[in-house]
Image (cartoon, rainbow, N blue to C red; front, side, top):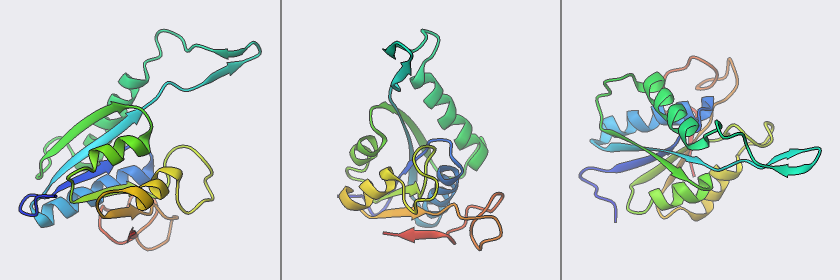
Length: 167
């Protein structure tokens, strides 16, 4: 059961604008509730295909290192280097939805952006946010990035809660 005196808010971060907005939302919520933020980035080796079929990535390609850099850069960009709430960062191997489900055990809340970096850009929900709304052990907030000019959406908006939908 989540500790209501110091709620832990899990947020998925993949470097997308929606995940950056979700991180800002989670930090704002943690500030209001006296909680802490657990920012999670997942990584997997991508499948590489060429003329000869499946191949292995170049040895200098390190998806774990890339995910870690993306996570730390996104945290620094979204909340600065001295946030006023506790933030922990975790880089975990595997599928993003599964990593967030595991991190959500005992959490008060999970926050994700509506669309990550992959998939179909026209869909309202990405596969990770949809999976979490169906299977998470705690409430899920899906923060919508939105379109430019839309209230609560677009580039350069603050991390306020407008534009977030609780599922």
